[in-house]
Amino acid sequence: MIPSRVVADERERASGVPEELAKLNVRVYYSRLTVGDYILNPEIAVERKAVRDLVSSVYDSRIFSQAARMAASFAKPYLLVEGDSKEVESLTKNLKSFYGAIANVTLAYGLRMVYTANKVETAVAIAELLAHARAKPLSMMPAVAPLKAKDVPRQQLYLVSSLPGVGRRLAERLLAKYETPRRVMGLTSGQLAMTQGLGWKRAERIKDVLDARYSKRQDEAPQARLEE
Image 1 (tube, rainbow, N blue to C red):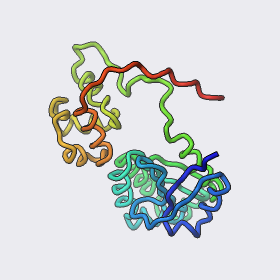
Image 2: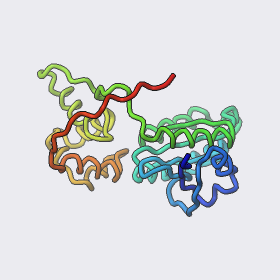
Image 3: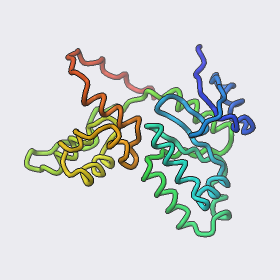
């Protein structure tokens, strides 16, 4: 079997995670990364934080700048928290403010959260993200179901949310700012990228889809049912 590949930040050598990844037939290449700790592919990156480091990054605001860079560089950024979550209570001054900050940063920048107990679980989580990087939803239903034509706002939301990588939340944000679907469709890549949570990768993908010449082709074969 050809090993999967991942790029890890040089500072991750001491974490023990790369050695565990090697046991799972994942080949690790090292680089001095400016964004994230593990890059799985051009769309997916993982920022790994021990519980203590996560708490510290909330109080010194590092988590916000890191999240912003992750969201701007990758369509699917992950925040992986490693360790015993019970430590949070003893490390924080105010649980409400801590979890409020976590809610803010994950929702504002579209970070996906993964929790692991130790380096072994972290390696397994990363390996499985690699293995399922091309996974697609079983259902091809759009994020917002189309309604009857007279419900114009919902139709507008459905239309914009169908753009690649957008979804309901970003569609609402785009329509709130630019008011009409026509204006959204006419935005440049730079204007799209300035929308919070969208980023350059998704902005360029949207423009590629909007500008590409249509070419009729047969539908792809139905997706195989997931194994139980």
